[in-house]
Image (cartoon, rainbow, N blue to C red; front, side, top):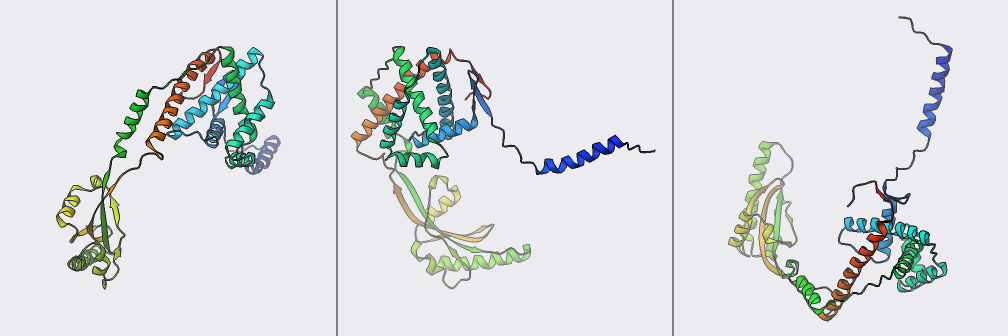
Length: 329
């Protein structure tokens, strides 16, 4: 079969040959930014959410999990967009001198303007992002005032007591008994299966020698003296509830003056000593009980206030066009 190669094809092939190296050397585009939601034609991206999460950290806001922090950051950005749109609709403007005064006030609470700027830089943020956050807060207060929204929050002694009792009854605050263990490992190198069995037997004999010389946890190194390549651990604290039942039973039976073993493991031969128990009493949050009560009261007040603010913001969101581009959390 005859191959026909025209002048036009040759020109096209040459152009392609010149283009391919250029494509290979061209800088790659940055990773695509994922749009999570669009509020009144304003896109909110995953990058925006990460930046807002960082800003929340700088401002001392803490959340129980990364997922919760991310959810709050996304909702905060959506609410900012809703508030800005509502302000434009009403012809409201924020006095920038008040924004700067609020930023200076925040800086004083964080040890000065330079410290605030340094904390922002450390997170890859700038002052404009903080100003945007403050501006949205001011717009919220102005719109809330015009709508007659004046949240009233009261917390009763009974509510504080119930929350305090819930904390005090948390199983994580109950004393835990820990078992103190110490082990000696007689390792066996990687050899043929036949040689390995012989070495394991020889090491088991050496382990029995350690067991005969053992007089308690502090004597383990002395009991292993003179035996080649023995790895003696420090005292290990273990939760007895997580120990294998046969080992737990053997340790109880051996007590603190005898070793359990020899135990064959993938690494070699092991012996384990029981060094007694230790009770750990988890500490309550820092401060006196009265200080804890006051912190709980403030926390309950904030929870109630947040619920009222959320109800108010839901009414404003109904006026906005919010398009979700990802699964709502």
